[in-house]
Length: 271
Image (cartoon, rainbow, N blue to C red; front, side, top):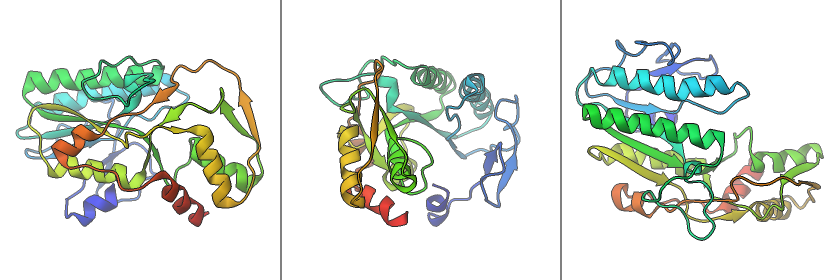
């Protein structure tokens, strides 16, 4: 995303909590500290909030999303003509067996992660409408790509490389909506380039549900190697998670380009 923004001639300033991001225009800080952004955000700025990855410290996750979101929107409300983008997740919809979820569907999150994400969205919605802040929630599906460090696709390639047993929950027939990293980034860029007034929610997804076992089979075919699988018998809270991107196509001209077979091939070529 940083590279793409830079190529589009945006001036970038990054708030980062860790030293892992290498970029010249940054300041180190903690979004959970009140006022940390007061003197950084200027009139006419565009804010993209990518913070809030799930980790072992659940309290940090809650603080970064809810407390951090509260302080961010309070800082934004003091400025003029700000546009805010919150990167969220299609998991907020919960299990959807028959059709990909739409933005008009009532969310029924069934995991702790999804519930906190939905609470964060509602926090942004409240302050956006209360203070007339143009705010867009981008609900991304399962992102994958060559530099990914977690997830089922990463685990598949790691199993092949290191000859490890691959653990799959339940039967592996659950559906997930996999979107390639370039398409996800292009979705964010498209939303920036197509300003939407008021409060909006957009799915950045493919609308295609792919079985976990089909992903495994595809990677076996690409690598010409067999993956040893151990099935973990456990009830699934989220059997089918997929989302319809047609509204995003209509509003911001978003359309995914990378089919999963080609995306997996791209990853294999980098290994």
